[in-house]
Amino acid sequence: AGGGYEYIDTTSPFAFGLGDRPVASAQLQAIQPIYTGGKISAGIRQAEAGISSADLGFAAARQDLILSVVTAYMDVVRDREAVAIRKNNVDVTSEQVRAAQDRFDVGVVTRTDVAQAQARLEGARAALAGAEATLQGSEANYEYLTGLRPGDLAPPPPVPPLPASLETALASAITDNPTIAAAREDLRAAEAAVDSAKADGRPQISLVGTASMQETFGSADLRDTSVSALAQARIPLLTGGVVKAQTEGAKLRREQARRVVDNLETQVRAQVTQAWYSYEASLRSIEASRRQVEAAEIAYEGAKEELAVGVRSTLDALDQEQQLFEARLALVAAERDAYVAAHNLLRATGALGTIG
Image (cartoon, rainbow, N blue to C red):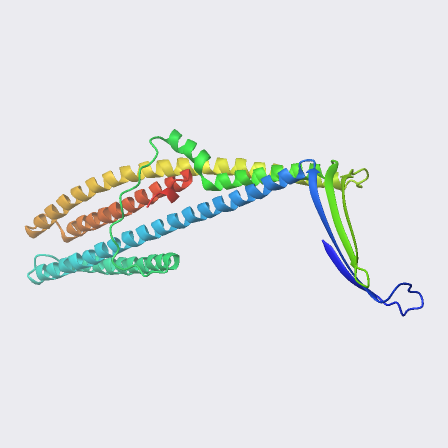
């Protein structure tokens, strides 16, 4: 669209007319593409794919954040339980030191027994200090991810339903994993870009409509209006190889996008398989650790009784005590690993964002 205003001064020696005449004009032009060789439709597909890719990328980032928070939460739970176990170990070992000292005072045991108990106590204190440092790191990571200090954390909710088989998990991952889906949309956008580049080498036809008006003001107002419509064709004949170069570049980007999809599918299959077997191994580890704790508790109680009657040495009792605490720590770690492995599997299959 356009417009203008003109003032004709008849005092000029080159002006002829009845007087000074202001002139106003306006013009409106509209262009409607009729045939673009597929460029417009390709542009629409490319834009739609770009929007879908961005949405799926956001979904993938959301699931990554959920997994990170779940992992950090379980790390805090595990490390708090580990600190509690280590503190109990220090308390129990301190009692062992006092008992060994009492038995030494009455001549039942030697100085070596007292030294062994004292050495175990110092080792327990060192392990407690390490556990507390690990807990501080886990709490700091949780606060970094959530912006909240971990107060009294509730027990984690039950593990969400998992795929019935590894084959089902793999099929779900290829279909629903948002990272793969986003890469597929990038591939779709790259394919549309190829079509758009090819369209630049095809004829393009547009309908051009023009309407104009000019009005002269004076002793006699004059108005002139005109309307026209025509078809305009653009046929690229000599482009200097620009269209071909652009098309080849778009094809290369399309192949790169296709390779990204293939690589992601391979990576996700590996992630699903690893998470699946890690979860199964963690479940077996939980069962084994529970049996180990039960056996270690029985052995420790027996060792204490046998120590009291002089059948076992102080070192034997300390060894049984250490085995009990290590079994408890192993159980806590296995429970954490199983919970995190389950959520790793859900993330790989693309189902993590649908829970909670």
